[in-house]
Amino acid sequence: MSQGTERESWGPYPLILAGAAVGVLVIFIANPRWGGFVLGGVIMVAAALRFAGYGGQLALRSKKNDVITLSVFGFVLVLTSLLLYNNELKALILSLFAP
Image (cartoon, rainbow, N blue to C red; front, side, top):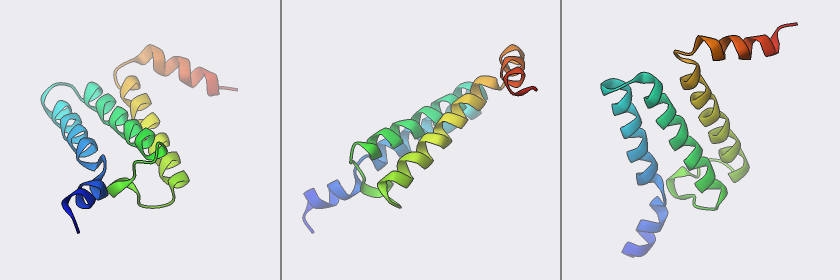
């Protein structure tokens, strides 16, 4: 295998891995709320890259399954991090689901 092919097979994986490491560091060092937001954002960036056709090591299943899974997990993580210390936003979202 040539070096160019090896590099292409990794694709955006190192970028996503570095972003996830930054998110975890932010959780432990600064603030869990913003760290979760960073992690969710990185996962959504991974979904966008997978949708755009950059697979590499991110390609585990079919493209459709990867994009849907990463998008949902990223969105839920961002939403959860926004709700972490915000009681008013929690009440508003819970009121949407109340009968």
